[in-house]
Image (cartoon, rainbow, N blue to C red):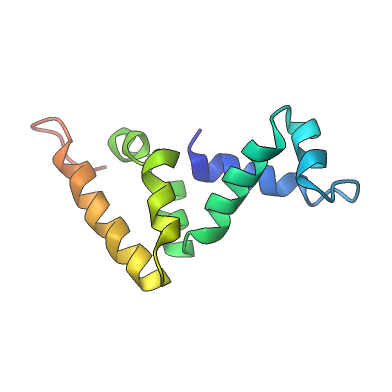
Length: 105
């Protein structure tokens, strides 16, 4: 599961009335409260354009390339425009890793 999909799943837990803290969510999800914070923060700090592309892709090269570790630096950039521009450059790098003779789905 992609870090974006996982973070969105973690966010859904907060829709339950009994869940008001990261610790509450962590107890339900079976992970640490730090892990809940990390993924919720990642999802919250990425522009919707980036999340939309990553959730929509079925391309295994793209899915494997955009790990949480690769996405985290994007969250530290200033504007959403800058984040989208860097993401676009990373998409190009991911395409360059594609095995010879294959095309993006």
